[in-house]
Image (tube, rainbow, N blue to C red; front, side):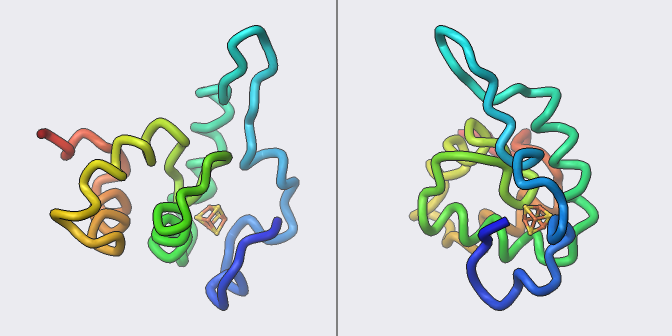
Length: 105
Ligand code: SF4
């Protein structure tokens, strides 16, 4: 998987099928398969660099795939909090809670 930065050396996804982290479901209104996203997220939640990974995805506005355990819609939701919080803080909050339920605005 092409994951930038030194933290990739400790990525739990290293050596795994990259498609697992890009669970795009083809169809008229193509979207990521939520069940497959959840499977990928289970790998991420045990990854020692998931905050770095999610921080990178938020900072670079990654439009595809599961990063740091977060799906595309979850990252879109998180991006609304960047500004009041910095990118790292948002990534840490997601890593701590494992969901976006803490995002009440
Ligand atoms: S958080 Fe997930 S996608 Fe990111 S490096 Fe770890 S296992 Fe890979």
